[in-house]
Image (tube, rainbow, N blue to C red; front, side):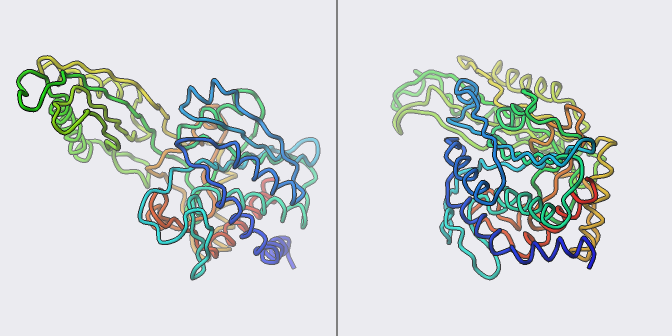
Length: 408
């Protein structure tokens, strides 16, 4: 029996325990917004300690959390030190999630299992990888404990809002200093690059008026519609003329995800706010992208008498670009992914953005790999009935355990 098959066997033997651990994580809401995530961290820490994994808790100071638009954050580190020398490898998964929304046929906080799939918010992104990584570490230590090196299991709570008070805060305070890192992802690809993301809040000011005498006011909603028409037209330009050379990434795109304003049905709206999300391919310059959008908005305002606009940057997440030092990660995950899943596991980019960029920006080679299906669509991430196939969870845990053995 090889070391790899021993790791696989340990994971098989303890898989029911792993599934129960994930169910407990799903049953504690950590919706962001509102971002009251410390209770989930406390529960996760209890469960990890019960498994024999010591946990260090790092509450983020309230002013920093509130400035990020959240309520409470406690980041967790499970640090496993094996001896002097060797690599330090970080495994990073996030516990903050978008609210469930409508249309669920299963309790989003129930962790219900049906037809081999576990349902619940964050079942696939990314509470599942709390379990993938924790049980990969346990398997490694039970079967073939490394003689040197270190693993930092980072369980953080600010991926949805950009990561600056999640892993960004841990890195800024030198609480983790890995040589390599793996972040939560799906099972059938090793992600080495991803899009950047710019989010802007645009507030359009007009003048309220009675709907019976609309000419006495300035309609902020009509002004916003004209801005939106200009902004959405950019998508046609992106599709036609801007292409990424990274496999798995196509072109930039722009979306407006939230609009609010007005006071009543019979009142001409004097203020309308919309929030836009602009995804940037790795080849784009983020500063130039933002400058162009601001210019488009202000040029449109100049054609609208009585209208003013405020533009506030909500998020600027740089794209993740591959670092040459990621080769050991890619090779180990591809090798064992192919052996365990029985198919080639490509290394490519994704149009998503993640907090892995915060490691890469500091020169730490990182990739994205964890438990999940072939596509985000299949996982129902950020939609109703998010789910993970338990067979994928089991196999991805084996891949990560095997890869950690090789890397250490």
